[in-house]
Length: 504
Image (tube, rainbow, N blue to C red; front, top):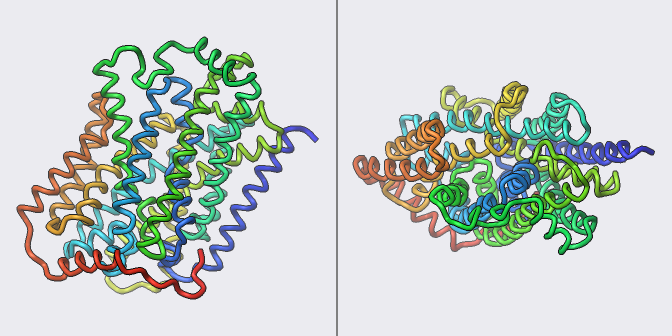
């Protein structure tokens, strides 16, 4: 049996497993809230691994190792910033988001939470938030399609478009029918596959090279001094400081990512955020260390084997194919696909909710049939996926470039509003709307200016300032809002008894 057949068998088993999980979730999805939020019944370990897997995407196993391989350890500051941001997100936002969204009229999407929390009778806040989700998530999903195409082109010397359509098609299938629960359960499997792959590949490469000493020597011989420095060289320059600050600023983005926030909203209780945080951060730290080491060890491995790497973002793929038994390599390659698919599926669900829950239901005055809403949610998943595929046919940026822009858009538009909604009583609908628009627009403007500073940081700061100032100018006391704010605090210290039969 040829090596390629083993790889195809491994990938085939993975794809079949994802479709079976999607079918299982389909049988358990009975209404619109189930489709969009899994009935608020996710155990901590499912929420943690699902949030991590949907967060990292192809960036974890392709983008970050490629950046480390090409530029050096200075790129690892992104991993540091993300770890700090993710920890604070689980610590501060997760329990309060879970409680507040239930207290505030059982909000099942981020835009509906903004509207309910701030009693926005104009509906503008919900509509603008829904539009922002559509714009940035279409770009985000497109980055996943690009990663899928690159994966097939580099792993099998295959056709970019075929790979993109295959990965996009399978992801679309299990998301279309399984909804939020399908996306979450497949994320658990995908998250485990990703972390195992990022442990196995660099270890196997070091063994193949001849040990740590030989690996270190080869890295030093094939890079300049700045490659292994956290500051990019022996002298800390203004440009280096800007690069480090920009990398650390990635952590701010966590507070505004809808596909992560909905995992918090779907927990069984606010109290379970603590155990979910421990699981999620452990997974994240191990995965990020593995990704950084894969990029560094890849330098030594390519030099030792005389491989000329055309695309740095394929370093993990190339090592997997040349180091491991074909079937094991196929499983590692499936982990790369898992990283891509987990994020696409989560983003499609949130985008679907924006179209149906935050735009269609706002426009339609009569309450629609629940079954109709589920069908519309699936139709929305299909439409957004098709648009993203069309955008990815001719990619005009790297995977990391596409992800960083979408990450900045959500972080700046939603991050300040989420934090202020949860922790500041005096936020108003007009303050939230102004901050959201300023955050989104600043991301586009700052990106065009090309200053060298990651657009998320100035956009986040400006959005926060505008939201606070406008809120102070427009604040009016509302007894209902004040009561919900107080009730949320009370809910955080009262555990909800687990219902009989609670399970993912």
